[in-house]
Image (cartoon, rainbow, N blue to C red; front, side, top):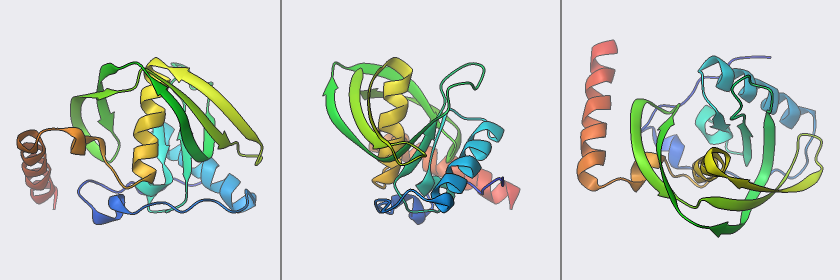
Length: 167
């Protein structure tokens, strides 16, 4: 397995739309393993392939405390949404930034697993938020883009300043 470099916002590659996976083969299974290792090392609870500059519809998520419930979502699509919740979100592509975002409280998602088997899952709470957040990445959207223009401008300025300091 290999750690993959995570793109940092506002990298334009984060706005690319990911293409559907035609066949779940060994290369996709390796991508899932590498993404999981990268997510755990970061550390995070979710990672979309777009964030590692692979523009395929692949997501890994593990919201458990002990890292025991890794799930791969290949070609995920949300079938239903209900309710509303506002949660503080963060993102491996926007390190150090945590902001409140309103999303659906419950979702029903359909995807393929790492064996290429279709499944449907009903999720709520943190898992529902994570699924929506990661699918946004596949569609070229980063969570900070839900914020007001003022907040987004401040975040961009802070990230630009941090990039200058570390360069």
